[in-house]
Each structure stands twice: as structure tokens, then as C-alpha cells.
Amino acid sequence: MPTGSDLRQKYLDFFKQRGHVVIPPAPLVPESDPSTLFTSSGMQPLIPFLLGEPHPQGRRLVNIQPSFRAQDLEEVGDNRHTTFFEMLGNWSLGDYFKAEQLAWFWEFLTSVLKLSPDRLYVTVFAGNDAVPKDTLSAGILQKIGLKKDHLFYYGVENNWWSRSGPPDQMPESEPGGPDSEVFYDFGADLGIHEKSGFKDQKCHPNCDCGRFLEIGNSVFMQYQKNADGTLGELPQKNVDFGGGLERTLAAVQNTPDIFRTDLFYPIIDLAEKAADKSYADPAFQPQFRVIADHLKASVMLASDGVFPSNKAQGYILRRLIRRSVVKMRKLISGPVTDFCGRMVVAAGNIYREVYLSDSQIRQAAEIISAEVDKFDHVLTRGLKEITRYPKLDGKIAFNLLQTYGFPWELTYEIATDLGQHINPADFQTEFARHQTLSRTASRGMFKGGLRDQSEITTKYHTATHLLHQALRSTLGDHVSQKGSNITSDRLRFDFSHDQKLNPQEIQAVENLVNQKISENLPVTRQEMAKDEALKTGALAFFAQKYPDVVSVYTIGSQNNWYSREICGGPHVSSTGEIGKIKIVKEESAGSGVRRIYAQIIK
Image (cartoon, rainbow, N blue to C red; front, side, top):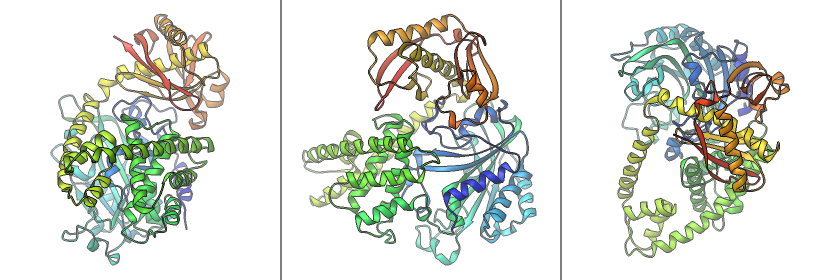
């Protein structure tokens, strides 16, 4: 039976044969995109090129991008939703368009993966006041073999794609366009629809019952939001394809449950044995699925330099780990630390040599185990706090979750044990109110669109290069980048160093960065072969992730440079544009890794 590794290779080979260049995946935590916490699709790092900037690898690109979507966290537990997933992606940057993309993906599914055309359904855009009905895609699809009654039209809620949703929610400069989505039908004979909560509704490709599984989405990205709120044509027509590896593999194996594939089941198999319970029992499936997804996502985030905390990416990681522990407690009796540790290693092994090294798996295991131990103390504190309340209700349950990280499920069970009843609707009301506030705040992160944030984040991106070199000059050449993150308010830079920086060292680094800014050194970009770039002295501590042809940014003259790194950009044209830098915090980011926060002083 085909495995996840088989599918990855077949996909890359198929598009390489059609002139595409394989590009490396981006980190799960974006380095210079303040609009989002995580890389949630393969197109996200390619925004500048979709807007018209030439890509050093050409106009046809393909890759497989590890992705994370925090908004799907509460959905995990059914047969198809996950937080972490791998996205199959191919792009045309102003090259081919609908005819080639639709025909190629159909060929890949039916000829390479041997999926029956009888099982494939496709949806296209129904049109609105600004964008016409996509009859062109419909005609192409029927010409290449799609059955007429397997073609469906939907509006902007289903068949329009941009990072921020339908056209009325797109900020200025955001690109988007109509899409064509392919669904695999597991068939009426399994009774999936009848067993679901949607049995009173007619089943169709976008039904939430689980009978139809979306496996690929070809976005025809030809529009961009104008300042006046209208849609304008992009300078080039692009194809942005995204397909779920896990879902596609489930279709190939003809199982409606993605958790039965080799990309999840090694974790579930271990959990079954430890819990002495069967995944085949529907009563336990939601717990098994949450554990498998959340631990796998935790491994990938921790290996990418994320540590559990109460904010940003760290908060999401903490939620993932703690939700896993809660589900484990429902399956087994006794301590869960050892149980969790074995499954973390199993999750890491799924991606060994694909994305993770042995050292990264060990690092993730250490981070997650420490958080599991800490959560035991949280549970103890939460249980003591509960005794203060004569009667528990939904608001108290939510406050316990917010203040102590005490899971709703445990509060609910304890109230039952005490002979009390908490109405889940009251808890959901508080939770929904909090979500509304969170969404409002998160929309503020994206306010003004890409263009408004580009100037400040570009300054910070160049500043990380100066900071990197200043650390090496001050502390030694053992310093190497271990990660970075940029928002519109600050930069964060992680680097290898085995001890805390003293005040004199911090000041020396800051002074050196500001000296190079005041010298107004030129910043230039060159394209060259990766091996050649490394020979010139360019730093590339993630060299294995870069393609054969790279962009090299040099700060200073070509013959007397201060900093030279392989990087995807963007950067200022000269260091004087940055403004003065202030280091505001230095701390540990793990064993042998330090973290610096710095801001531009206005």
C-alpha cells in the first residue's frame, strides 16, 4: 500500500517532469511576516513573487510545505481535521494558467495515483458582482474527463481563496482569486452521511459529514485588493495549488479516516497498547485522534524553536501539549509522562530524515516532557482552586482554563463527581466571547495589509543580519542562527551560545549594530549557485534547506563586506534606513541557545 513517503516523491517527480523546480520548505514559524503566527500554506512565503517579484528559481515551482493552522485546533477529533499537516504545492508565477493546471492535477490523480474518476468531484466559482462565473474552468474539467453531474458551483464562501478570506475581508494589497477544489467521494454505501449530524441535509461535496474529502485546491490568483476596496488585476496571472498530503493519502488508501494512514497510526498504535483500548471503538476515537495530531504538531513546533509559554506561538504549543495530556488521562490510569514521552518519539520518527534530525527529535522530547511535568503541577493548583467555589458554573470553568490552564473537561467531570452540573452552553458562551475578542485583536495584526507592514519588517529583517554578525564578532564564530521572528514591533533572534550575556557584552553588540547602521552601508543582492555562495563566505546555517540557486545579501562593499548571508529577503537598500537599534531583552531559549529581543528606536 502506498505510504506518505511514496506520495511525497510521486508528487515532486510529476511536477519536476513538467519543468518545475523543487524549492525548500519554509520554517513553521515565519521569520518576517508579522501578520500570522505560523506558516499555514505553501504560498505564504511566496507572496512577494505572486505579486510580481522575480523568483530566483524561475516561474514554475513545487514543494511540500509543513504547515500549521491554529484555527483548526478545536476541530480535531473527527476523521479529517488536523492542526499540523503537509501541503503539496505547485505554482505558476505568470506562466501557465487554468488549462495546464487543471489537466495536470487530474492526470496526477487518475494516472499516477490511480484514483477512479468516478470518485472525483470538482467545485468551481459561481461568480459575483466583481468576478465572473468560472465557466472556463468548468469547460476544461469536462473536456478532460470530469462527469457533468460531478461539477458543482459555489460562491465566495467556498470557492474564493485569499489568506484573509472572501474579497470583503481582504486588506489592501492582499492577492486572491477564484479556485477549483477537488473532492474524493468515499461512497454512499459506507453510510457516512447517515451516521453524521447532517443526515437531515442533502449531501454534496462541501457537506461536513465526512463522505467527501477535499484533497486539492487550485487557486487562480489574478486579483489584488485596491485601496478603494475594489478588486484589481495582478500584473501576472498565477496558479497557487495546495493539496493536503494526509488527505490525498487517505484517498489513495480509500480510507475516510486520515488517522489510519502511516502518517498517524504509529502514534495511535502505541497509545492503544499503553491504554489497552482499541481505536476501532468509536467512543475512544476522538481522544486517540487529538493525541496523535497534537503530539505530532508539538514535535514539529518544538523542533522549530518554539517553547511553551503564555503568548503567541508558545501559547499554542502549551495548549497542544496540555490538551494531549487531558485526552491521555481519559484513556489510561496513572502518570502519563512516560506514556507521553514514548509517543513523542514515535511522532518524531514519522518525519525522521524528511524534516527532522535525531537531535531535533531529542530537543522536542525534552521540551514536551518538561511541559507535561509542569502541567501536573498546574492540575494540582487547579484542583485546590476548585475547592474555593461552593458551586461551579460555566464562567468559573472558563476562568480556571484562562488562569491556570485547567481543562474544561476536567472541571466538568469534577462537577459531576460533586453532584453539580455545569451547563456546557454557559462555558461555550464565555469561550465564544473570548474568541470574538481574540479574532478582533488578530485582525488588528493584519490591519492595513502587507504593504503597510513591509517597510518596518524589512528594516528589522536587515537588522537581524547586522545582529548576527555583531554577535559573532563579539562572542566568537561559534555563534550561529537558530531561529528568528519578526513583527512590526520588534525582532527576536535565537543563536547558539552556552551562557548568559553580561551587560558589557550586550552593550558591545548593540553598539556594533548601531555603528554599522550609522555607516550607511549598501545592501546588495546577488543570485548564485549555493556552493559558490558558501565559498564566498556567505553564512547559511540552514544550508540544507536552500535550493541550488540562492539569493545572497551582502552588507558593505563586495570587496570589503561586513555581513554576507544566504537569505530570501526582503532587505533595505542601505543600513542607514533602519534607524537606531536597542536590545531590550536577552534570555535562554533552551539548552545552548540564547534569545535576544531588539527594537528600532523611533
